[in-house]
Image (cartoon, rainbow, N blue to C red; front, side):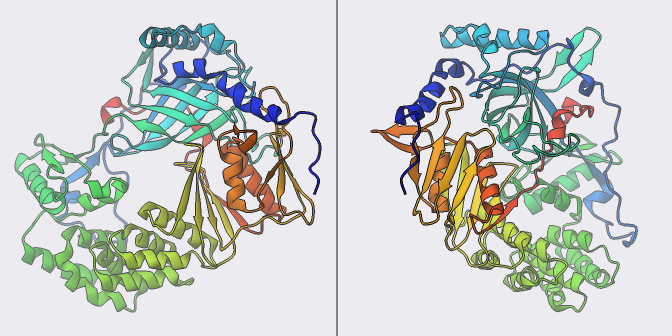
Length: 593
């Protein structure tokens, strides 16, 4: 095929990189935290209203079908968890690297604070940049950043943040990057806004959903909203504690000693009785990515520690779980909290005719390291008719010490159920399975995973935690003829029926010039890496185009819809809604950090 002619030459592409590089002196300034506090000049501070007094009592009550005595002797009988809630935080920062879609307008007090921060960094970094040059540049935009810090999060944990343009001049945040922004709690007072300490910070490339742009106004996605996937970082551990219903130092010490005996192998100070009413908790290393699981186990731990009494209690629960309306989850957690010594007591249930009793007993055994239980959970994961199928897949993912569990997960990558395949892939990623070939595409732009497996080719893209794309297929090759054009003409892909390549034309988002047609591969993995890599010209050869994650996801979706990429496209449902940026939910007390 003869490549179509364009007026602009290779230099036209080179200006993409040159134009972006021209921002360097401005962007260096923003590579440290941006102030996250400001006044109320015209800005909606309703989210800062003082929270009403809320009880730290448990959010849920026991299942009314359960035996009222199932929690007898557990920590739950004597205490409840304090501080196990999400924490709403906000901040203000600067988004840069925009394609002239930004604008510097924002409430006066916000601009004042941001300008002050820029001047402070001028002094700290021995540079001179006029704040006006940022606010008057359409490649920048001031934004409000909102996030929910997860319950029981620990220092360094990452979480998603929502970014919203403040001024009406900004038309889109697509392709932009949030520069460091402190995340704080705020409270409105008659004398102004009181800002708390910085609880975390946020930064990273902005993902603007490419879907729903053409829908009705009520459901249309807004390009002035975006998310930084995994862009928030927690500064310090959040507090987690038990609060006794009836203050008693002897009881607090008993609970402390019991928890240290059960969970103290990797965290000796897992529990600390600091007063007659309070026991501080520290999440052990093995539960850092599953804090809810740890809290559940703590609350279901028997306070007594004598082996004979625990064995007797485990046997009593065996009799209870075989009833159709038994509280299966609670019984299984009580067993798990007892430890490996109760495995012989529950193992006979693995083949029980009551499916729920068999599954929950096997789940407990698997969590406690019983290989026989792995077979039972594995059967549920492979059985399309099992009501516990998806839960079983997740359990296999959590059995990280078992290579056999990983092999079963890998087999599920070829399953007929797309959701099961995605769950198996996610589980293998968490395990760091070596059969996944991972490519980091342009630093934090996104990660590309390639897994050779049977089953219909599958493309999966994440919308939370981190920008990540997975290709599950033996091979992935585009079909010709094809034509793809980005909505803003950032890239055009084309190929004639018998072509053995794809021709790509890239538009410079700053000066709107077009590159010469660039030859690239029909192989989808090579194509994605070429499209998303840094925009570099090496000795006259274009190595990659520098397209952001939003564009890549949109392209893959369109190619699969047009059947030019013979695969099913699955998009993860975002776990953090962009509505978070508009929410007026009242903040929780900073003491709950």
